[in-house]
Length: 78
Image (cartoon, rainbow, N blue to C red; front, side, top):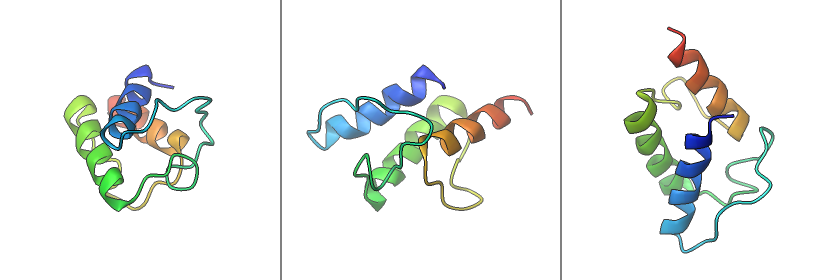
């Protein structure tokens, strides 16, 4: 998993005055486990696009950290 992705997740959490996420795995759910609302997901999308150059939500919703990581990885291989 990209360490930069975890850092971006923690940056969004910090903006919500939440502590860094612990125990994040590929199966960690963005809404249910990390508590991300729509605006948080939008912020995360912008941060990912700035860092990795990919809009991970362009072709639909992403539910887990692993799905984000997969899209970032696939975009890097193009």
